[in-house]
Length: 175
Image (cartoon, rainbow, N blue to C red):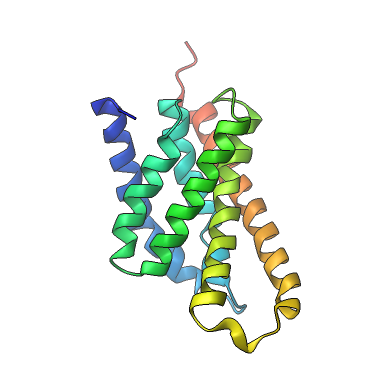
């Protein structure tokens, strides 16, 4: 999958802004008083940032490219975070191949919001299985997992909706 230079520039700027501004949202989300808040807390921001390159480039593979580069950078900080990002990117890319027809429609907001859902779900599962979640019964965690993934999707959709609103009302030339 080959990208033009301007497409790679958009992807690089998106990753750089996501990394820099994302730390602010990530650290702020750690202040919330419920478990898993750091995963759920960045959902609006991550979908907001992912919406821009998809809207601008309008082609398959953009989600994977953005998440691949971001996961590579974030893996230097936390390998689990990098794995969660790339797996969420792969699942979101697959969903986009299945449902995305128009890069300006409500489908783009659904796909972009799904990135947050997949990211939270993957993070929760990785944390449970790799970081010692065996102290809990899996049936005890079904409701919290379900609630956090639903909240993540809603937050992701809100982030995509905010990006759409910003683009349509402030960034697109009406001519």
